[in-house]
Image 1 (tube, rainbow, N blue to C red):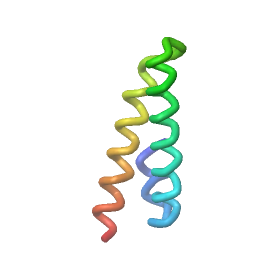
Image 2: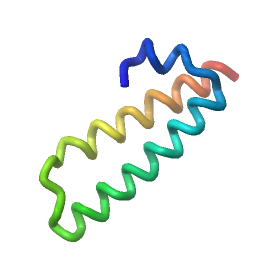
Image 3: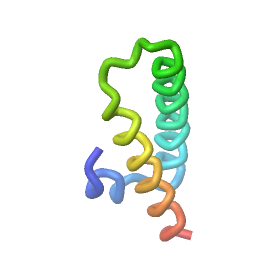
Image 4: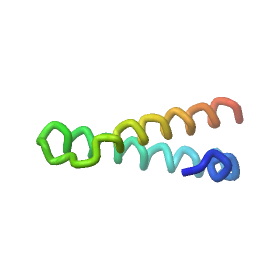
Length: 61
């Protein structure tokens, strides 16, 4: 998701999105552990988006 789109969200929406990202990250880690992960770059993408959301949440407080 683009940074501009994230900035338009409320803190509650960001927290909800963060929870979804953590679930996706867990799923990707499990796929990697079982050898089923085809797109390894998705792990990096999710990790960076989690960092973006956490940064925005910290700036809004």
